[in-house]
Image 1 (cartoon, one colour):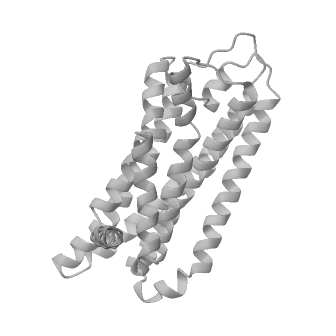
Image 2 (tube, rainbow, N blue to C red; image 1 turned 90 degrees about the vertical axis):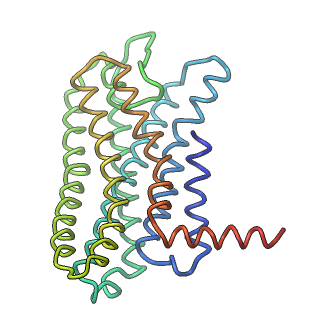
Length: 279
């Protein structure tokens, strides 16, 4: 599954780079999303594979905090990129005449950079706040990787401030972007319904459909992790939900965006024919 995730997302990046017709804001965000998906899975899966191979199921405390920091960074960055993609579709469908003026390469780059800085700051704050906690001996995380919610449960000291910070950040960096995405798609759907031709409506819905599927997977499983960790003590249920957003979602993203996109499939055929011509 890890190889499928890495190769699938790497192929998306190579296809977008190789075809000049795909050098647009939408595909710029898609290539960044694929890169983040590769990094996201790389923070957890290689360590799991090493543990399985060596039959050792432990991780050092600094290693655990490092893993938490990277998971939060790339989860936050993916959250930001999905929001940017929704905004891109909103401008393209609701303000098509001003699209090239608004969605400039400079703005797209600045949005990705801002999202990265916010994600890193958020991850560092969570990690630094976890450093102040004290833990009992013989710690065992009932999970397949270090996750902040499970680490806080093992703390012997007061975690009220940590929990409050988690809830505030989840509201700001989770609920606010999701609200923006929902608002964008309400406007998008109302604009699409005004298109007179059935073909135009189908094309607009097909372009937005892939993004909606990915958003539903990411936010559904992401919020599911925190809801299950708060509502149940079953480590198995929590682990299943975590697998969905750390492994399954990054793995299926390339298939969702390529199989449902004629431009991507056309560019993929060109790349394959170009590679085969060198043989």
